Length: 224
Image (cartoon, rainbow, N blue to C red; front, top):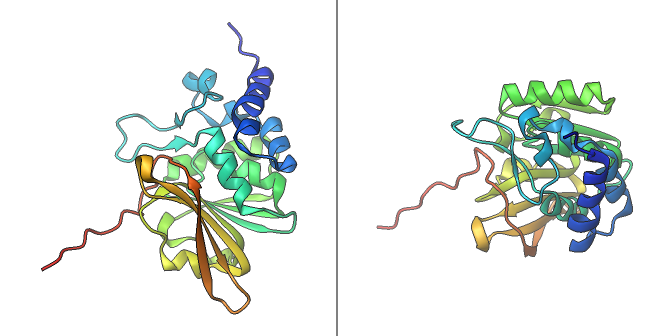
């Protein structure tokens, strides 16, 4: 059976994205236009549009990686309020789907990935689809990529225990960082904003969960 990916994409947008308070038309249009199936392994292409995270590495990998479920991704991306002149740092881009979406919303995207194999796949796929305002770079996710910063928006593709100061330092004045903090049912989306004086404030937005990103595990604290 040949899948009708256009219809699956439309169903994803109508039933998973629009129904969860995502109203940003540019974001909705980007998610309808971009072939999500191109960013997952061939054997799971029919699962590209399900309302769940999709595994994009082997299940027994030391740090399995996932394409974030459409609805949480869209809610988090909307919170970033990406503008057409913005420079975006997309942390943990995996196979590049999130970077493709941001490429439709922003002026340019730096896609950071720690897994070199995933980074190569992202570069290849993005280039083949004509996303020429995205540059894929490799490095530790929790360090960001200061060399191309500062950024208007920093987006983290997964849950973390805490946001390192190194990432907040890479925000421009009036820059935003969006992230999911915590794990499981207690996790939530948080928005960080840097004001014109360089002071960063944050607010908890709504409950939201996702698979964890590597490199952001908070060190256990001991009390004596």
